[in-house]
Amino acid sequence: MENRLCKLLGIEYPVIQGGMAWVATAELAAAVSNGGGLGLIAAGGAPADVVREQIKKCRELTDKPFGVNVMLMSPFSEEVMQVVIEEKPAVVATGAGNPGKYMEALKAAGIKVLPVIASVAMAQKMEKMGADAIIAEGTEAGGHIGEITTMCLVPQVVDAVSVPVVAAGGIADARGAVAAFALGADGIQVGTRFICSDECIAHENYKNAVLKAKDRDAVVTGRSTGAPVRALKNKLTREYQRLEKENAPFEEIEQLGVGGLRRAFAEGDVQMGSLMAGQSAAMVHKIEPCADIIRSYFKNIDDILGGIKTKMEV
View 1 (spheres, rainbow, N blue to C red):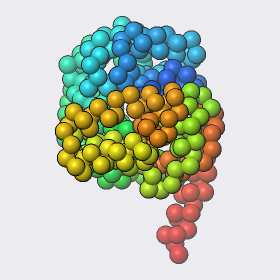
View 2: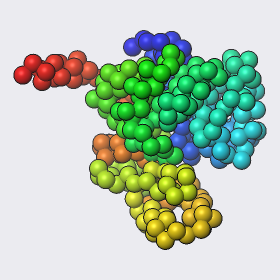
View 3: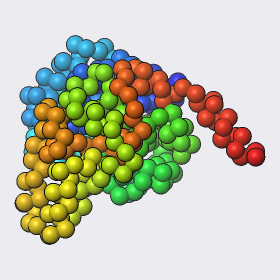
View 4: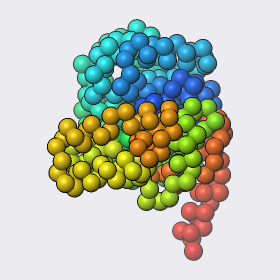
């Protein structure tokens, strides 16, 4: 495939791998880039020196374009962004904040900027600040989320901006990709599906939890704190919900989640670990190489479109 997102990023397929903290390591990012998409290293809450090491490692594993996802709410975001500007990956995707103060320096370094947004107003603001493309993420996604669904958010953002729009949240297969392009998107961002890839170094228990997930297993906690997160339900999410229902102090609720993602990713704790995943988890049924996952989003598209046409004609 070749469209304006592919041309902008220098990639073969219009697929961006989600910047999942802990999960999106150099290994995963490189595998996605080698498979024809755009891999992202997730800075998450990591300090700057760790992010630099990950960038260098990714360069050893691929000669294709890749990027870094910077969580602007991280206490290390200033130092991480400076490392990114120095190392010059092809792309920076930003989340949980406004990247405006970094935009000039990122552009001067030749880095494409793709903010993750959850509203039309933020998409317009990012375009005015110089964003090269917009990642419109619906509430179906895993991790930190907004309130609007992908189905409703993407077409509104497409109508509101002129830069390429990437649809994110709930896109698990070729049917979802076709829907995203029908909504006007120029590409898709995929997170949860890549957890269950051969190259993802997440603990086997985490991957198996995604494979076993049912349609209502990806639940949201943290709405009362203003920082909603979607993860697979377990003992940790139930405890979160109990504290929120009891109007526990903010500090107590926040403390419960400290280290949760690390426990899931590195230790395989499926009870007190934060198994961040989107609602598409229930549509993930096997572990495959990243390259095969990417290609699967573009297989049988003619059959899907033919089926739509047939249903319209009946």
